Image (cartoon, rainbow, N blue to C red; front, side, top):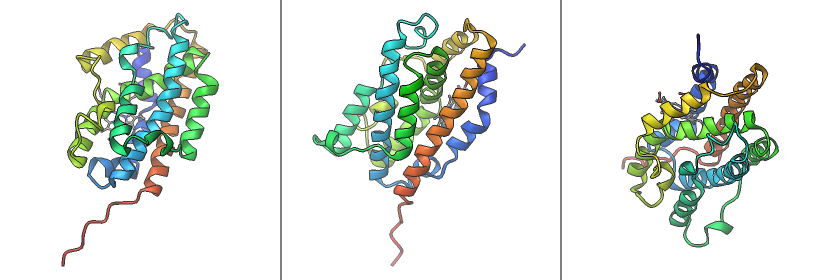
Length: 218
Ligand code: HEM
C-alpha cells in the first residue's frame, strides 16, 4: 500500500521538476543571477512566509494542522535579518511583491487560515522543500554572493538539528493524517497548485533579473 507521503511526493514530481528547473533557479545555482535578483527573491519570500506563518499561528488551534505548525520552522525573523543585510536599514520601504507573489499570498490568505488540508499542502511544499533542496540552494548562494551567516539565515534552520530525521517524522505525520479521502485529494491538488505558484514567482524574477553578463574578454 502506498503511504500518503509517498503519494504526495509522486503526485507533485512533475511540478517539482518544473519549479526546480525554472531558468531563475538553475541560474541562481550556477551563479548567474545578479545580487539584486537574489535580494528580490528573499523579499518575495518574506511576503510569502509572513502569510504562511500568520496562518500557522491560527492553525495551531486546529487538531489536524497543529502538529505541522512547528514554531521551530519559523522563517520570518531570519528573512527580516537577511533583508536588513541585503538592502540595508531602509529595507522595509524598499521591497515590493511581484504580481505572482501577490497571487500566491492571496491564495494563502484565502485558504490556509481556516482549512487544514490547504494549510498542510502549502506548509509541505515550502518547508519540506526548504529542508531538502533549499539547503543546497543556501550553500550555493552563500558562495556566489560571499554571504553567511548574514544574508542567508533563511536557509539555516537553527531549530532543526537533523533535517533528515525531521523530514522522516514529518512524512510520518502526513501518513497518519486523520482526513477522509476527499480531503486528502484536496491536499494533493493544493500542493500541485502551490508548486505552480512558486514557479510563477521564479518566472517573474527571471524576467526582472536577466542573466548576469560576464565581462567580455578584451
Ligand atoms: C535548485 C532547486 C532544487 C533542488 C536541487 C531540489 C532538490 C530536492 C531534493 C534532492 C529533494 C529530495 C530530498 C529527500 O529525499 O529528502 C527535494 C525534495 C523536495 N523539494 Fe526540492 N529541490 C529544489 C527546488 C525546490 C522548490 C523550488 C520547491 C518548492 C517550491 C521544492 C520542494 C520540495 C519538496 C516539497 C520536497 C519534498 C518531497 C517529498 O519527499 O515529499 N524544491 N528537493
